[in-house]
Image (tube, rainbow, N blue to C red; front, side):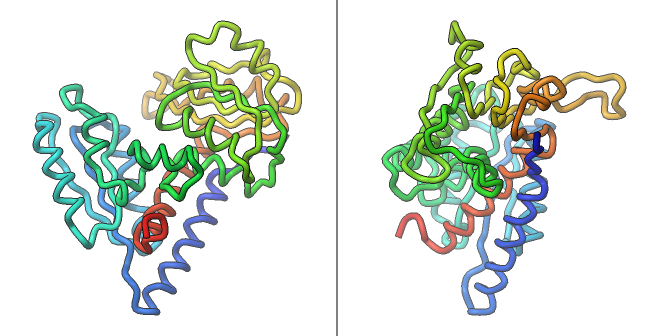
Length: 293
């Protein structure tokens, strides 16, 4: 069993990006500029956005944070997005999810200029990805693909079972893993909360991508010997033994599943760190106009 070290790989990616930015600046090129929109006071969102801004500083990007309280109207958020779309210095931007309940998430995402959609959530980017055209790939799935690649994990001809069908992770993962590329060329089964024979299906998997959002849902009896297990889940669970009062749990019961796995990602320290690194990669592409010429 080998643990896939997300911290190690994310640091590698960010160092590679830092070198690229340094080179660009020396050649008189533009400094990449990422903006983040944060609505409300969700604690997890605050943490995620802070980590993204910190990564910008480490790599040499410019960053802008646009904040509004939870009472901001949908119209106000759409106006912010329009301003960022029109700002020529902003290469890419994200709207941190989740949003307050009174705001239509789909309407917000569809208002983002696909050329600046470095989160890869816009329907145009998802559609282009599905067709194999240049696109911004959602940061978490892109991070998973990078981990598979850098650990040289074989994927061609393997059975990949994706647990979870969200448009942010599960759906794009299923598309990416079946594409004629590396990583890819898998036979993919996309499962979800209503799949009746889930255990039977996961036991057939050479690669499991767990992205259901249910803490420790994948147990040892659902995993065959030697499977590659990628845990995308990240949930705060109350834990009185922790100083913070909570612990971070993935979708996989790590202690049980790890001994049966050939490769496995931990939580924390796995996929989550790669998500931020992948967002930085997309921002560099945006600054260079490498996706949309």
